[in-house]
Image (cartoon, rainbow, N blue to C red; front, side):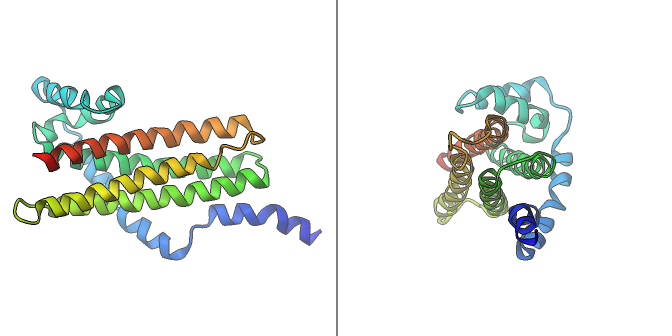
Length: 211
């Protein structure tokens, strides 16, 4: 009986409990994120939303881009730098909320051992993605014009690209045809959303780097 109990619950335990070294890192980055989002969310003006709309049309997902960033139009103004920073903040915020949604789903739905293992791996990838987005935001705050500008921007582009890759890797784990279709659709829906947001953020980072 103990062996059966352990066999069933061990994957769930691995899924739910994040390692302690990651836990403090998450708390540190999450505590200030809502404040950033709150400060950015100022009532937009028509001229500023026009800038957001035009900028979003340069991305692969213009409608999603406008949906997430138009509320910050007044804060962004017509600044490519603030546009990139805000896109990163919105992506990080959504990535963290996606983690919570997936954990809640895993706790409240019956899943096979294979599905639990894939979910655990997926959450680890998303956690890495969130960390990389956090680093990108920190570095964007430090970037200044000068001889190191392009080098620093290249580093930020690398971090955001890595976050996008981690999101894609998460969905790869649910490619097994024998997995529950509902689980696969749910994960794909949420993870593709943050992957698309990361793509949008990367586009704006690239644009800012090019001047």
